Length: 50
Length: 388
Image (cartoon, rainbow over the protein chains, first blue to last red):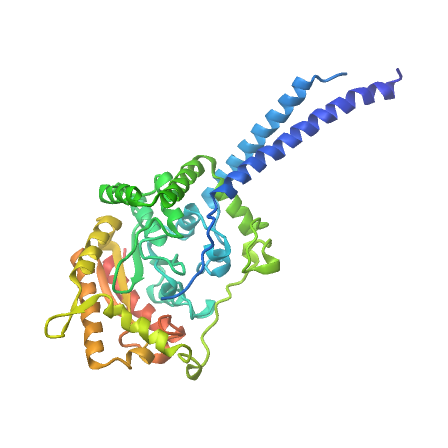
């Protein structure tokens, strides 16, 4: 195994790990955003002056 | 090098936890500083009508950011009349009020279209009072109920203020909330409980603060029909669309009879004729206002409040019969006296305004706004006592 192959064989799993971590970050932020969306009122507010 | 599936899952979980925690921290920071920039009032594009729900901390930040020791904060609450519908940004009555009052006062217009005098601004005034900030609360009402801070569209602000511990201890209100919740129909009760739960969760996780802040500053993520193709744009890019009214000759033309019925109804629905046919204020409704005031506004806030009972435009009131006029005056006077009896300064406004002071049946135009500002400034100075 030459040095370039060795480097690639280390980099690819690390990159996969980093990608999973980043996907996790995005998922965490998405969960926070979903809490916000769930807290919004379902009925629209229509203004009328009486 | 081989990475086990377990390490991959851990990386995902760790990322998820850190992402969520990061959002919570960002939300916590947004709750501390987020507020609309160059704020003058909550116009339609930064209000619940377009699905933008300003949070309670946002409202409070608007007042606290302008306050300095030695100044009194004047919180304006209530509905579209005090929000300034009928006046462009440049001619807004609260700008005139600030000019009248001078540098010892900070005027913050937290009135919302369609809001009760007990919602939004009232809660901010209460919170400022709890912090020891000198505050005067100005709001408007017709003759009739002052409404509750909870249960309607702006009710989410009450739940947020409550969950964040911003309100004064008030057993009378707590008892009413408990009684009111028990009396709700199951779907409505569930809706209110959801709103209360969301506010309790938000007090810890700050999701409303973060995403409303992002919606205001960066990108709005909720589709709303009113803004059509621009729904995604950050709300700070939307100018205040309110304009001054058309020339007087073009006002008060539409739906005259319907508007007259509303103007007559202000006193007709709050009174009844006696055996001789003379109109008397309907006492049960008047008493219910008294109970409402006692369980809505904390005793410490009431001496710092100015309630305005707003009259309609003379373009309609001039068409009253003598009996209708007498009934209208009687009902307005009785309701004003009820507020005063409960320790709230109350004045009837608009009775001596000309038709050109109004933009429509109930909203004031620029000249009416200026007159109102002059009047309110005098009352605010009287309530605040000698200048520091």
